[in-house]
Length: 113
Length: 113
Image 1 (cartoon, rainbow over the protein chains, first blue to last red):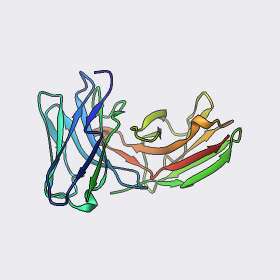
Image 2 (cartoon, each protein chain N blue to C red):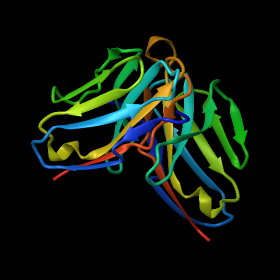
Image 3 (tube, rainbow over the protein chains, first blue to last red):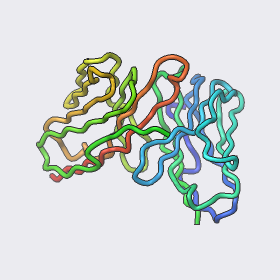
Image 4 (tube, each protein chain N blue to C red):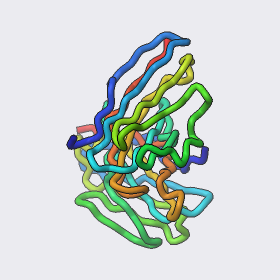
């Protein structure tokens, strides 16, 4: 598509439930990134994909967080057994190649109640 | 993880005034980036700086890459109401870790018409 598409745009979930956040990158972009933006904070790096591989997943906060990318395109970020501190905006970005010209999606606002 | 020190946290100005914000880091970056984020949207790149000492303009925006490579500033001249948003600085390193951006916490700009 023309831009990076994320869904859902908003998600409210109960503590302890699992959630899946989806990112559709720009067609042809090989690199894909997930960042987290907590209230009043800057963006915090979570994970980087090159193709379907994740060379750096060091930013994932705990083992409740996982992500995958299939077909070199769509990526899914999964948070298991959600906690209130997981509430944040989760932003996805893609670029034509590693490190070059990020384009961000509009994000998924996750609220854990 | 590391974050850049961005100031001020927020600014309330009158339309027509000039604005200045800056970022500092304890470590060197090879590229400095300035982004703007509007409500419900992802960050959009405003200016990219690639060389120490570089001064770059984009319309009413001017940004500089500090000589030490540990700081950068962004100026907005003759502000208008649509300049409202959160402005983020980001640092990027070269080489194998160039996929990861390190962000400041943002400057919230409010422009009173």
